Image (tube, rainbow, N blue to C red):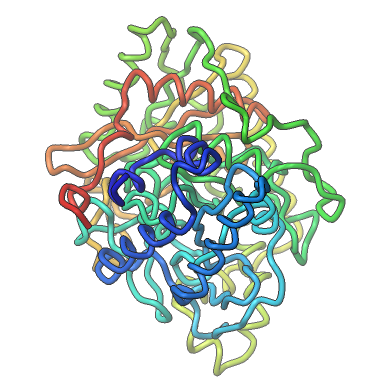
Length: 483
């Protein structure tokens, strides 16, 4: 099998080929490193890449294990790169900030440990915006990550490096994290699948705060829904160090079929969630085209609206995000020499947090609860909900963020991603699936969400949609010729 064919395999097929010793771990590592050498200088998806000889020796050790009949798991020999907000032992965790520097991690985050136990080899990190703030991946440490389809466009974020590395075949699966759409937006911008799990599905270990920080979560990304499910089952599961983590049993990620396909169900089409939330022209039409395909396959689709005022949801979002982000960054902000290195958006989050009162935070929690109850009302009528993954198509990579949408000015650096925030507030499982391209060839995704803890049913719907509308099979122009 040539290198291009090898890197084009989905992760499940790749796992089976390696287990059968039809493909060696060395072959996979060599092909991945060659692909990175060819495409990463332009796209800048992977950072802190380890040296090739060390990685090839680890791949050889995996092959030797297979020769003895020893397999670590379904990810045996997989090259993976960890998002640069999480720790991977021996590699720097910069968070994209010169204020943090090249701090070398002394241990792995829990989900990284779990991927390693399944046989994965960490080859480096994936790029992220500074502190993960903003859905556009650029920073002063490693620079700009460019879109896999059109390098002059944004890769999204904050899991932008992960999404681009996946789309370009540098890695077979990837971890990401999602606070304000950071698994969903870059997936949409790069024509891959990104899944934000239910709150607590993937434990955050290590973490300073075990109780208040309930908006961000790690999760899986891949080129297919089935591979996302496999990685979720690897990353997820109860851990006593995360007291709010979920203890539900998850399928064996190495199983032939970790998720099934459900027959037709009821889908509520939220559109832009609220009538006055702006969308760039063409996004709604792509999503509605995809939903018509689901209708033709036997699913019921009906328009609906989230029954909570838009300003209430946004107020809850702003205050809770400011509390969590500002609190996390306050120690850096308090040091003038480090504060000067923080990007303006990070400084703004801290400054806003310092003005919050206890009463305002209590009100924000009440408003957040209203958002959750509004979703519950919809799930009385529907099995799933659908909405666009982003309000804009991939934009000029040189911009810091979109200043307006359809003529409507954006009043904060993240207002242009408002469409993902309610799902975060409610802690719902939600996946972004590729839904097509505009006339310029720019990708877009659609969010599919279900009730809390219905992670696998949501992925089953995503898989059904993928079979009906196989946009994820398309590959970026850079892969049209041998890399």
